[in-house]
Length: 438
Image 1 (cartoon, rainbow, N blue to C red):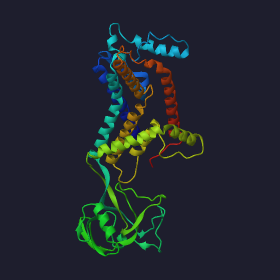
Image 2 (cartoon, one colour):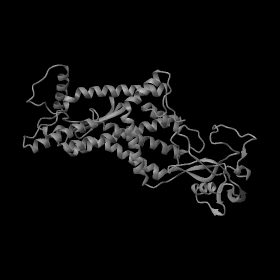
Image 3 (cartoon, rainbow, N blue to C red):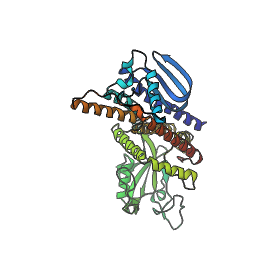
Image 4 (cartoon, one colour):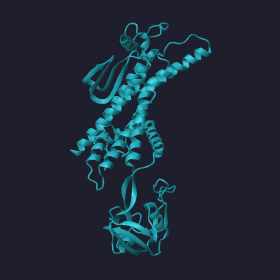
């Protein structure tokens, strides 16, 4: 049941993101006078619809996208050009005819193709920008409202012995291993360290620095246990420990080996709690996600080949592989059905919101690809039209006609087929060789 709740939450989140994306197109289009005949979330058969004013609003059966029908998307062909024949020419002309049929008599001025180039860019960028805004809002809500997991001075674990850095994660202590100072001093999971070396402890980072600097020296330590303060002495051992960077990640040398240095060691691990962060972290996080997503888009063909090889061959699927809608639903279900200790509702909610934020970053980036039928293709057409008109103005020529974007319809159909095939591959891959968060 918990798994299903996660999937349903993600489905609703995706539908809301799609709906807001289309609003991002619809609102400026109506503002500029374009007639919007339909606003639909989903594809396929209509499940529900209602008409308000001149626009039909509805929900369709397949929740894999949405659209707003802007009247007059494609202009009539240039009468100065000789008409061509053939299947491709027929396809182009049918797109023009369908666009013209939507325009009411006397309302030619309300056709999308009659907008100025800057207004076309605003309309077509409205959807992706809305996705970016959603990502910013969700990330801000998580960072400021929920926060990030931060280590506390309350102990989650106390090691029995000192194991080498290269020991397996499931290695057990033996009689030959050196006893860990924390266990020898009687520290227990659940203890909260309140003082070390005579100084009050305000946070885990301060405590870690103090421990590292007092290796081999016997010092006092005060913990709070069951509401009582317990004071004892402890002697950190000096052992090689990893060197961490400013982001808390272990550093490595040119050969990929972990960089270590001698430091004091007690054998303790902190509990983690969500702690609200400053809103100033949000721009950097959004920028990093945009950079990562753009990198994925640039290498998408190779990544899809890797997915196909893993699915139809014997290779393992990369844990950083691209995923589809089924994979996103799996992630949500795994999050809400997780039984990991300490993984509460707050952390689940934060993780679900961050998945939705990442999805909207992906929608923003993907829709900017300059190919029809994606928004970026329409933006490219508007920019081309504007540049051509500026050149005509400088040369003192007659204002050029709107860009004949209908001529790009064969390419648009080709891109659609590729996108459909990509979607089918990812759905199949997420079913037969899924990537799991666990």
